[in-house]
Amino acid sequence: MKKIGILFGQENTFPPAFVESVNSKKESDIAAEYVRINKVIQSEPVDYAVIIDRISQDVPFYRGYLKNAAISGTAVINNPFWWSADEKFFNNALAVKLSVPVPKTILLPSNQHPPDTNERSFRNLEYPLDWEGIFNYIGFPAFFKPFAGGGWKNVYKLNTPEEFFKAYHETGTLVMMLQEAIEFDEYFRCYCIDQKNVRIMRYDPKQPHHLRYVQNPLPIETKLFKTIEENVITLNKALGYDFNTVEFALRNGIPYAIDFCNPAPDADLHSVGQENFEWVVDTSANMAIRKTKDYKPNINNLTWGDFVRSFVSNKNFPTKKTNAK
Ligand SMILES: Nc1ncnc2c1ncn2[C@@H]1O[C@H](COP(=O)(O)OP(=O)(O)O)[C@@H](O)[C@H]1O
Ligand SMILES: [Mg+2]
Image (cartoon, rainbow, N blue to C red; front, side, top):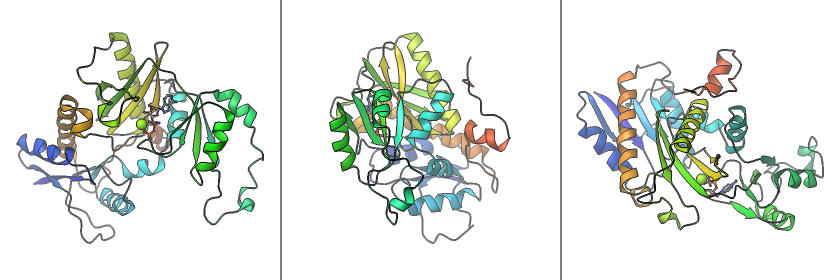
């Protein structure tokens, strides 16, 4: 019997539905359950061919457990090594290389020194920063948000340099980025599963959390739909995520990718709604089953993106879309 495990935190609806969905498909020799962890011994294989990780971003102990599982072959979704390395500023830089439109973005040093550092630790950094150049490049309004964040925490929309400096002082040791605000007509949030299954959902960020996913949405114009779908796949292939969401803000007909570092994306029935929930449960269950069938012990069964693979194979990273039809 090959096992699929799901590792999760406080969420209520997705984990049980996922387990039930896998098991209801009655694949011979494949069963899903909640991951069980006790003694974590170095290099010792775990009992799972596949683990869906929904929580290691908040529980570093789990991240360690998952990396240890992966070296004996467990296919962890998403790749815990890449997830540890990734962040939003890099994501945007990569999108530029891939010709996927993104808002102009600048990385800023944290306002306060990180623990155990002082001004002597920053002798490579010019002071003051070229604030005028930065503000001229980004413009206002601007978004100001952590380079490695999530859940809308510490996300500011700012209108003036004065507002910026006030916010900057509030952010302490967080590394933040300043980003052009895309004043959008429409907004989309897209699941991408197994680097090929895309679900484009209309999303209204101006609504309260539980009302943001538009229910009974209007159809999306075919050309825009295709562009979004293609960009979602391009980004996820380059990054190597099996399960992710990409957000787009539409301005003057161009979808700008806003946030595509969501390796444990919201999949709660009460926020995404019944139809999206059924899709995400069923599609992720099918992916887990496929990966379980492909699983071989003691080899690397993780997914690695084109970006990493280009280095391993000593090839230039492709700068054009790789999935153009
Ligand atoms: N550059 C931007 N232009 C327009 N809206 C943005 C921009 N950046 C963020 N937002 C808005 O703020 C929300 C939260 O920012 P996001 O980058 O998604 O951070 P998080 O990872 O915390 O969700 C987005 O869903 C979007 O509504
Ligand atoms: Mg977001």
